[in-house]
Image (tube, rainbow, N blue to C red; front, side, top):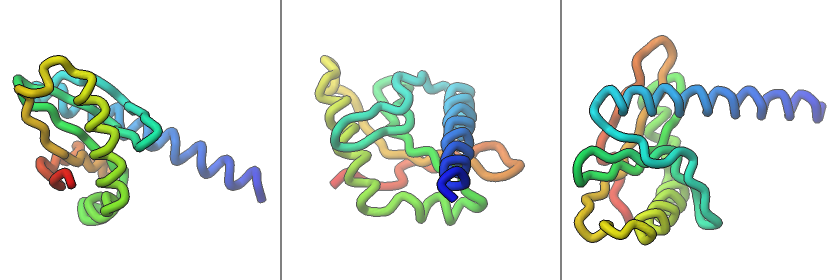
Length: 124
């Protein structure tokens, strides 16, 4: 039974990596520059940090069957962790005072180009 659980986690991990790669590609084609991938802190993790001009997009990537499920997967606890990690990343930037920050979602759906939802939540 434990082997089945590990195999499932590995599949989910690979699916997540593939989804993040597709999301980064989609954002790059929209003119964003990817500054960080899987930025981890003790407080939380940000999947992608992308920049276009003075706008920094803190991006959560969700691989789900529908857009609704992807949006529902970013609950209050996840928002809090993402915001905490993003705050640490921004604090290390010398130009953070002039940057605009937005929290986005990229939903990777079956047989579709990734859907970029801007401003999916506001920081606490």
